[in-house]
Image (cartoon, rainbow, N blue to C red; front, side, top):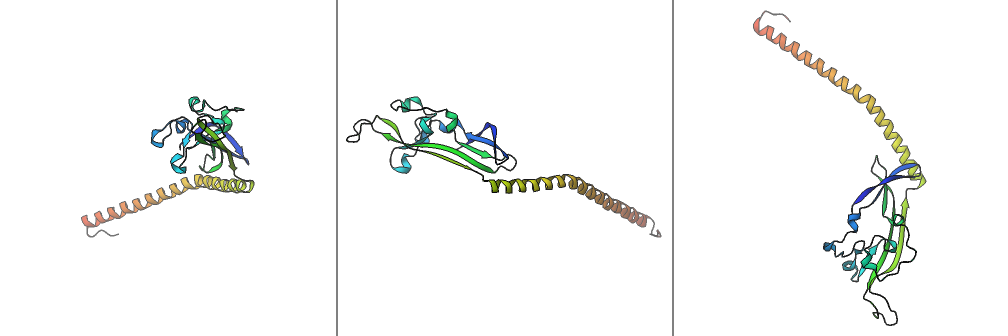
Length: 195
């Protein structure tokens, strides 16, 4: 699955995090994985049954795939996006918010003795998984980030100073080589030359 920047940030425990959401292309039909409808992830081959995962209340699923299903209390789709929260400087994932619905494919009316079901996906389970960094871990992260920032500032100051020292040393070594070579040339030209 691929993710894209959602265009906004959130603050968790005082840490600003970028929000990434599941790319819409992941919801597109894909014959390679037997996904024939937008928004239904096919798990049939894994479960030996017609099982599909979707966003809750069939959000972002093709209307034609759920035409036989009455969807009660259709909520705002943004509430059911799959999001991960990433600290931008370190790239560390600090949280996730993933809601999903597990569905089975009903073969249609009369498939079960006394239960009359329409053909199509039928919801079995809806799950919301929210995990974020806790207060202690957030404080440890902020302390570590502050130390890294201090080190970065120190290297910004010390780095150019070290570069100047290295260049000065290189100049001194080069100067000694030039002077030594000049003396060698003088000795070759004048064997009585005294050093």
